[in-house]
Length: 188
Image (cartoon, rainbow, N blue to C red):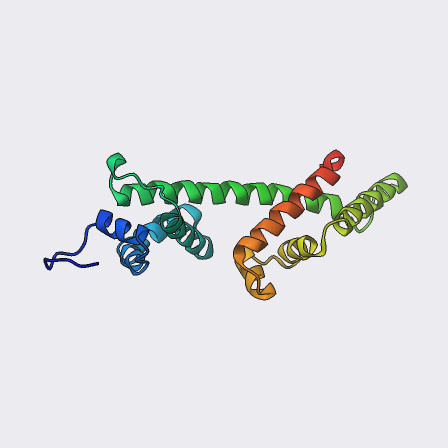
């Protein structure tokens, strides 16, 4: 990107250069706005790893999609809006996962001394159904869910452990949870 003056390029000039394939211009935009994006994501999520994920996602979207319309406001406003939206989506997903985990734990929880033989049979039956539902999942989906729920690792940590892309882990987790939900629908 050539500039005839010593003034730094505008956001719009940089975005146009990115569209023309000058990916290094995305780095300049990242340097300008990453602190803003990460800071907002961290304030909303209160989790550094999730804030990093949102930051990466926002800049990947800026690079891959022609989503920004300069007539609708500044790039910083656009990035702030996208960051807020993606962070809230993560919070909702986190809440959904927590509710599912609570229900899951109540299904597999076995008490040390059930009060009656009927309760014992009921707990055993639910545990067996959960084990059966898990066994019906493809190995890749089951592995991701077991690591997440039995070991408590985040999706980023699972990605590192399994040496697969984060998007793959997210996809396997979502698909596995959806299949479990359908299978265990009558018990949730």
